[in-house]
Length: 285
Image 1 (tube, rainbow, N blue to C red):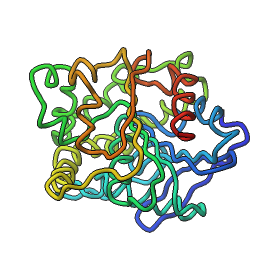
Image 2: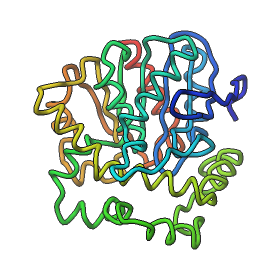
Image 3: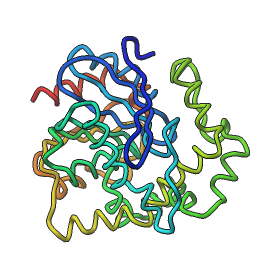
């Protein structure tokens, strides 16, 4: 897994991140989703590394990165706080401008980084996500049924108790689907009570503060200034929930392209070649 990559623990001003990086060329930052770690990218990273310097961190609160202190507004788990980590991490590695790719919960951090730091982001790729504010404003019975976990995870204490009663049953996953080393890394994370709490805090931040940051952007007329690619899994539920996914993103972007990929939700594991090819085409446009 990640042959030729370096593994490093990076001390930042607000967080300590476990980071895997390798390859050569322009920098690309890959951000994982829930409940994964950076290891979810191992198949895609190997396909990008011949052309790009690929950086894969565990987001704060996830995997083996540090756990932010809890606050009433969950600001330390906000996507704005994680965006600060991204900028500082890339500066640490010697990059002032880079391309960012985020999947699932990582897509919200990628979006926030590109929105808050337009001069730093060359391009942004959003995988399996729409802005948090859009998701909440468009919420209907389908969303509440299929994405019920958003509302459950926003509750105090109960989500952690439910998950930790049997993390393997709750989250699933397998060596065959994820790869032996990636699955082992994932299982270590989901069996750690502190990590489970950190992952759930990401959702609490979404419901308490992240959507307010989105609303402020919209009220101020801010859009992503970089070329933006939106990809979604055809065997997941974004099209079922939103119809034309690109239409959801159009008011938030200036240059937008995108399409569906024939796979389930964890596209970096299920369709790494198709995903890598789509990213490589986008990076070169």
